[in-house]
Image (cartoon, rainbow, N blue to C red; front, side, top):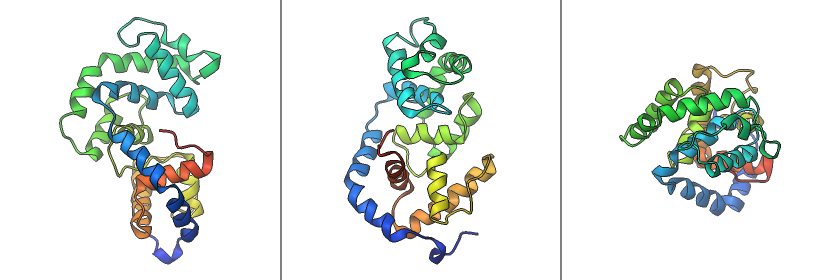
Amino acid sequence: MHRKPKSYTGIHNLRMQYAQHREAIRQRLNDFASVKPNEYFYELVYCLLTPQSSAVNAGKAVEALRAGGFPEKDIDVAAILFRKQHYIRFHNTKARRLKELHSMREEVLVTLSNGMPAVELRKWLTKKVKGLGWKEASHFLRNIGHRNLAILDRHILKNLTKHHVIRSVPATLTAKRYLDIERKFKAFADTINISMDELDLLFWSNETGQMLK
């Protein structure tokens, strides 16, 4: 059962912050919606690299891979991920996953273009792409223009706790728990009339001072 609206806290300040950043937030979402299909592969690579590594490093690593000719060229992916200037944790495991992704690249791109609803695409991706959990699949789909999927990273969970949407940050997120928190997040977003996608970017901006993808 969703919490009653009166149990939420900090709504007034949140609305003030949103009003201040609304145009930048909406422009960022428009940027995501403008991503071309030929960039989808690299967006997916980015989301495979972000777990347990910084978003900034993941972005730099993607550009290094692109510059090296990946995936068309047979390059040492693990060595690139290991570079100090954009170090990616578990670089050997992630390098293997990127190569596995390359082998199924066409299947993924075709599926992304077949009109499947976002919630079904997310479920398919989590089952098909190794290393892509619910958070990463949601992140990827948001980054190519899909809406209303929660990206439940630590920043978002911390803020959902702060505003009494959830009681505490869970130690782990099973699929069932993820979807339960997503429903609560959606109810909160509907109550305060700010979409989940916009709240996600607002929380990130408040926590990090940046509005990264």
